[in-house]
Image 1 (spheres, rainbow, N blue to C red):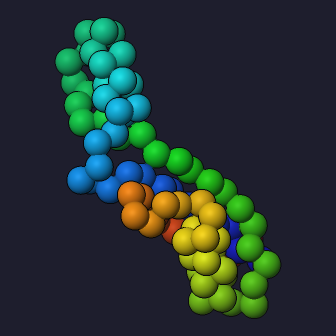
Image 2 (spheres, one colour; image 1 turned 180 degrees about the vertical axis):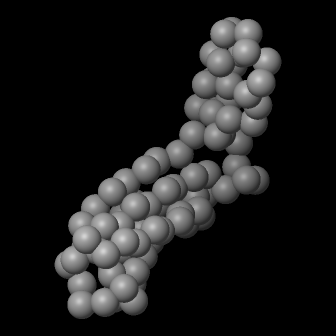
Length: 82
């Protein structure tokens, strides 16, 4: 069993209106220290697989087919033995 953590973000070349809205809201707090906000998704799941390669393969398949839009989004997978 593996714990999978998937971070999905819009590709750098894609405009991120939600990130811009959050950046604008942060700006109203007058911190002056936070810039270039990007918003994405974070998903955790358990993967029942015999080894890390199989767990990664299963997680990548789910990302490509369901969780991420490969045209607009990048994803990063972290695996840890549970």
